[in-house]
Image (tube, rainbow, N blue to C red; front, side, top):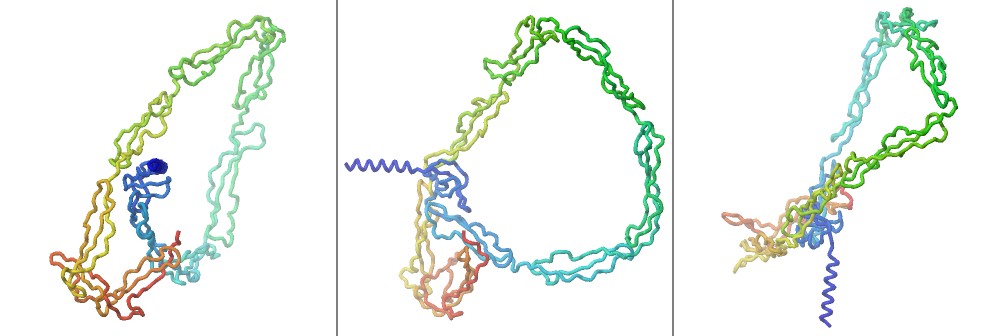
Length: 574
């Protein structure tokens, strides 16, 4: 009974695992700056297969959140600092990073903000002074110009500011004085063409031609008005030698000049007309068209006659514009004719016309119909791009099922593509170091070095973890050793105040109330302790422990002095 229960549980676990196998969009890389997946291998790949290579990246939904396949979490590199939020005075710059891998990264600092100043001051525009008095007019007669100016000094601009508008202004000035000059006519101009090219026969009006002249007077003065030149500025002359205008001819009415050409049915009669209403004159155009014509005449008497065929009409269009290659049926075309009686008989025919009124002909001259191309199956033309995990393989297909023919359309789409391939082999995973352990106590074998200027030694260790599938071991040493002085609980008397350290980043990094700070700390004074050792190679000596000391009070503080300033123009939090 227990074995059956275990078997049932095992089957349920397998089915659940199979059901929960999640398909993702798999990428070959995660951008270390943006934390986004790049270089798509393909959609519809199981997450487990995608992550056979821990350097890969996947998205559960297309365009969704990017997830790294790495089993250990890691922060991306910080982005470059943004531009300062202001162009003058105090602003801030920001930079970001993202956590990728499976799990949470150590710490939660995704955003950093620091104070910045592009320019110490902001531009302030100046103001214009009052306009100066106008200068004297530039002319002593007629029209001249006068000017005035102003300066950008009320107040002066600062920090790159300016004044807007013109510094100089000009105005016309009229002296109301006439400049000395004589008034006179210019010579007469050339005659214009006559107003008509010919003389209408019997008309009273005769065409004329004209010529003009100009009165020369000062242009620059408007006061007072100068007396005009005597006489007129225009002269006319009749065009008496023009030829008479042409008169075009016009037809008179049509009149019959013969009897009807038949005694039964419809015949013809001859008609004439004369070009005399009026006749052409002085080179005028002759009457257009013909002077003689034949027109139908109806005797209204039936003529006896049998039926007869009219000529065959034109061939119709073929019932198709092309013929199918290899088809038995060929498109055809048709033409028709009409069984007629002698014109002008409108009575039933005596005998019908022999034969058919329709004729067909094969359109074997038509071109073959276009055959559009169709793709064949995709085939691999390259090896998988990787020897482990998911890679890419190049595939091609040919447009030959069938190939396009007789001007048919080419196959739509691409003939080459990359698709994913699964080696089903896990990729090697290199080992990585976990965090260093704390430093051990500073000691020296068989020596008491506490509170003395004797050099001891400290150790700390770390472990190489996460190595799988024949990946590379962690580089470097598993143990770190350094030289040290043991000053734990040692009295050193008066300490010294450090210099100000650098200004900190702004906290909080977004929103209101962001500040930055710097500190000075009370530090122990070790005047007689060498800071390094060695002959051929110098190595630093570190102080270990919690020494006992104090400093003179500084601004009311005994161990740490802090200065804080607000950060300005910090963006709101998203």
